[in-house]
Length: 208
Length: 195
Image 1 (cartoon, rainbow over the protein chains, first blue to last red):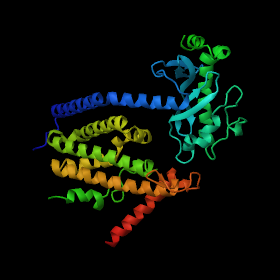
Image 2 (cartoon, helix red, strand yellow):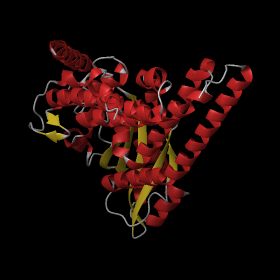
Image 3 (tube, chains in turn purple, green):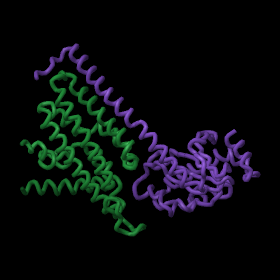
Image 4 (cartoon, one colour):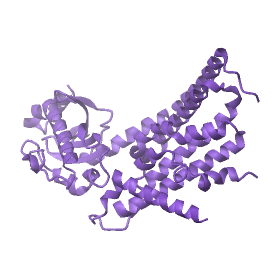
């Protein structure tokens, strides 16, 4: 088959048609994968929520609401058992990681104590910053209440044991947790500390 | 049977160790065996389909706009891979995520479209795409394995040293990629010279 001559008409027709065909192919792929991708993302979030808050029987994903710490907005997933709030999972993030963005799911008990954390996304250095997903580093936050626990690394005068050779990643981790605590504290915890057992009060305070 | 189109990319014109194309993903994604293999296979997929389509459309693409047309075709299949990986291999996608869209800029793809697919018919082009892609995968996986063994003390995520053992971290950091690539490159070329 002879090559098409490089005339203006030929070039326009050829490129337009190729683009149109490829755009159609992309559209089809998008439609085919859309639902699966949404499911995967939802499943990831649900798995993370299960890890960071005590056992619950509601659908935190459906009950999600937004919390704000003044600068950033985070999504908060309330976990309830027998319609009583047992914890709040907050999807928090920081851009202060060594590789930039880090996204973490952190669970707070109704009194503000950290229940557990789960790193969702990060681009830290393998072998160094990636150790923030190791239990050795993660577990030190369990059961600590940021009201009395200084969420910064020991080098900066805080209470957190940083990962060896990954102080920046450790700082970023603390930053993300601190952001989440501030946001959740402002919106939910502070107004309900007096009546943590009264679930209706928490619901009013938490979900407005 | 023209099997030489297939084996050519595997060894004789291996894109990584002989043509030295696509070194950016080679260095960036080979921190472990799995990551490297995932990147290689994703590239193979794109290469196979971009070669097929470039070969099919070669008579229809005027010379002056061929690069533009190739890039549109390549970008389409990269996005397809991106969506498919997001949907079906979310774990691997999490690790390779940012490098998948960069396959567009991998010069192996444009190189094969330009130097092979636009001159040959569909079947040899498909074989060439597959061969070059698998050659790339092999090279990446071997670099990835060396770096993982030395840097993490594991192979394909199976750890064979203690959890907190001291490994040569340098090898999973960027300089380690250059060292590993350099040594393997030298070894392959030494062997080829001896043949």
